[in-house]
Image 1 (spheres, helix red, strand yellow):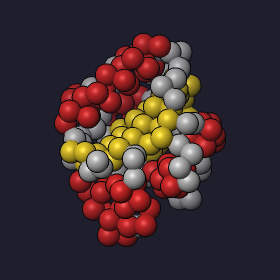
Image 2 (image 1 turned 180 degrees about the vertical axis):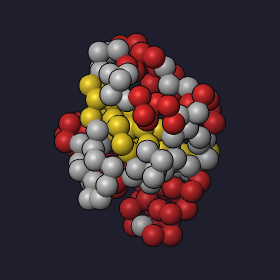
Image 3 (image 1 turned 45 degrees about the horizontal axis):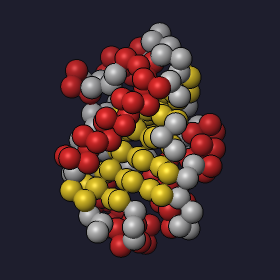
Image 4 (image 1 turned 45 degrees about the vertical axis):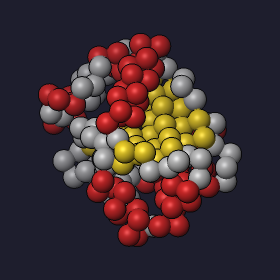
Length: 169
C-alpha cells in the first residue's frame, strides 16, 4: 500500500498527522489524474448506505455534494467539517445545498484544518482518507475498517470539534 501511495504521501506535509494505522489492512483506490474524474464506487456506495456520516475537508470535492444531498432527505445524520474557503464557495455557489444543513440538526463546522486530505467516517465503522494531488483533486483514497484506524479517526473528529466553529444549534 505504501508503494501505491508513495507519490501522494510524499506530497503531504509532516504536520498532516495521518496515523500509520490507516495503512494497515486497508484498500487503495486511485482515480486517474485528469478530467472527467472517475467515481470511487466503494466510497460512493458506503456514503449512500451510511446512516451517520462524518466528513472533513479543506477542498471542495464532489463527495461533499453527495453527502449534502443525502442529509437533505433527513435519512442520514451528518457532521460536516469544512475549511472557511469551502464554506464560502458553498454559500456563494450552492446556498441551497449547505444552508438547510446549517439550519437543521446536522452539525456543520467551519474553520478547520486538515492538511491535504479528506476524512470520511461512515457509521463509526468505515474510514476513508482521500489524499489530494498537486492539482487539488483526490488522487488516492484509502478505505479501512481496522479498529486502530477507526479509533484514530474518532480522535481526529474530536479534535476537529474542538478546533472548528459550530454553525448549527
